[in-house]
Amino acid sequence: MSTNREAAEKIVQAVGGKENITAATHCVTRLRFALADEAKVNKEALENIDLVKGSFSANGQFQVVIGQGTVDKVYNEMVELTGIGHATKQEIKDAAAKNLNPFQRAIKTLADIFIPILPAIVTAGLLMGINNILTGQGIFFDKKSLVDVYPQWADFASIINLIANTAFTFLPALIGWSAVKKFGGNSLLGIVLGLMLVHPDLLNAWAYGSTDKIPEWNLFGLHIQKIGYQGQVLPVLVASWVLAKIEIFLKKHIADAFQLLLVAPIALLVTGFLSFIVIGPVTFAIANAITDAVVAIFHAAPALGGLIYGLLYAPLVITGMHHTFLAVDLQLIGSTGTTFLWPMVALSNIAQGSAALGMMFATRDEKVKGLSLTSAVSAYLGITEPAMFGVNLRFRFAFISAIIGSAIAGMFITINHVLAPSVGVGGLPAFLSIRAQNWGPFFIGMAIAIVVPFVLTLVIGKIGKKK
Image (cartoon, rainbow, N blue to C red):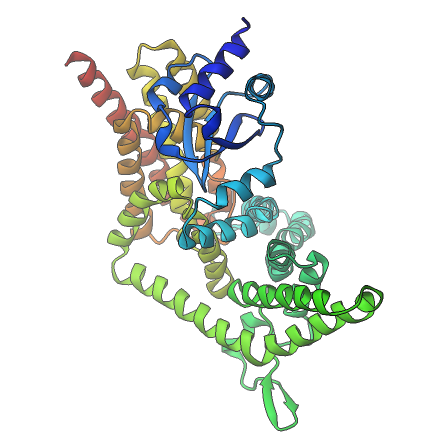
């Protein structure tokens, strides 16, 4: 019997047998299951299988980490053994969603909307980091930037800045595309909706607080403010839902022969009027209230806010609720120009990597050593799942060490008002997305996130061995 087939048999038994598997698929490194009852999973037996590098449950899916190049072979053996048939990732998501409560479904919806646009946001963050290096004062020269000393680089930096800011300038279009698609509508109409909300004929949202007179439309006696929604999240989310629902309704009630002429124009026209009359003003006020509340909390008690957020972010990742804070980050950037939450996320990633690295020295298990090293490198580059689910949560003290280090680091950088003008790559490259004037305290925070989890994990691991 081949190793892959034997591993497939053991995995099926460990997840509760083939009768407990509703559907299954795989990605580059993991088997993904929709299970009838996750309580039937024997995690201890699962993690004793040689090819298994870890397991975790997220968004209604139970995932088993196998590794690139092997996972597809194990999956094919498992399909042959169980006869469950190949499933697509969407089918797995649909099956897994049945196990979620309404709150979990809401969180999953946010994740499904924001994850597809994340590459554009992260790319923009990295490019803004390059622009920060070129234009930040005091990095290479006293009280001067690189472009001040070498003005021939100024236009080069200007072009980079334009490219980097595009994703944030037209953020509603990105969200509109992803959200309308998620809600079952035409994603191209979502793009048009998002662009409509940032049309140049509207007052730029970033100039809203500094203008003396806000332009208005006079709609038969109803005065509607001509305000754009640059950088805003909530208005386009609600408008996208309305657009998708109107489109679905019209498709059900209009004959196929007339749909091309009527569905899109009516849906977009009705949603457009509702957006400027009701949806935009109401959600804009709500979004600003949320922003003001978050900012007020961290201003009132920055140390406590940083400590709690740094402590809780990794546990929120386990539940999937961390995707909610991406929306908050983008809202903060849209409303204030910077975010103080994302820098703590970057340090949380580093802390998970450091705890995993500590496990490499704390354990004698060669399999755990190898997984700890590779997952630590991955976490240092911003991908924490292998470290968190494959190593740290298996050895609870490692996970606790990581969140302690993250909390201390988060508290330190919050006290020192570290801000990021964009969301970038978490982990060690994160400093590129931090304001240049905040690099000093951020690097100290990075040092805390590296040293504290590593030392705690190593010390507790060695003490555990002696006992």
